Length: 292
Figure 1 (cartoon, one colour):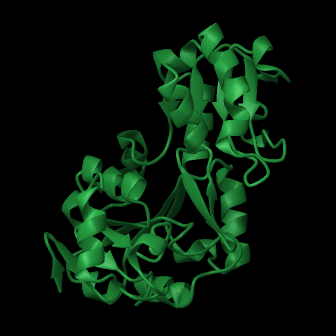
Figure 2: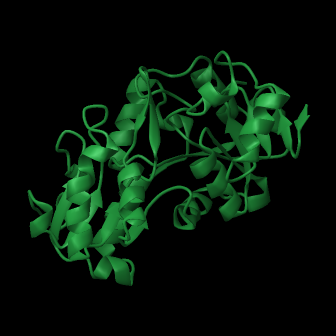
């Protein structure tokens, strides 16, 4: 079935003839952070058995090694995919290499926005983590303590950075994240607010083109044979569009409450039309979930 320019398909099997490389989001597609979604493990196993190449591309602000452990613990061993590429690891590498003029001007005194005080992503890079933004040379968004703290609770710290003209690195651009309790604020809301206040921000991860170059390097497949699968229009679908590859949008992820009455179902044409009218990008396909 077609919904405007977007084709609705019942599962991944419908995409096998047209695509050899699959770029998969993790949260909201494969799992909710605690357990895999129904049929997701089986679907990924079948995809690999069909000889397809797979990269997991995540906006996670954690180290790659930590993400690999999380995936394995939930039920997705590393043998199920060719490479895990994460926004956090890319940010760490960019700071370590002082990749751009922006990164070269950061300095070494960092005030980090974190979840539970965890700044391990940037450990062992010669940085010193300060306890007040007044002492910093740059800001880094690594996490957010949601639901304990929401975006508005960080306003004072962000405004100190603005007053001092500090640059900010965002190691996770996601605006919301899925959890067993529903959706929560994600780190990207802090970087977005800082930008709204007039701050200088560099984002690592989706939908920014740099991260997709790493995907292409990991997938020996022509771009026209690569498809990205995710549950975020603003990150997965827009990122794929900017990278010049096809996309499939999982309706049962972070936008489920706007689109479907029950997980695993497809939206009505009317629900999709309302949603698509204000969407930043248009996917090539709709999927109910990551199912075969």
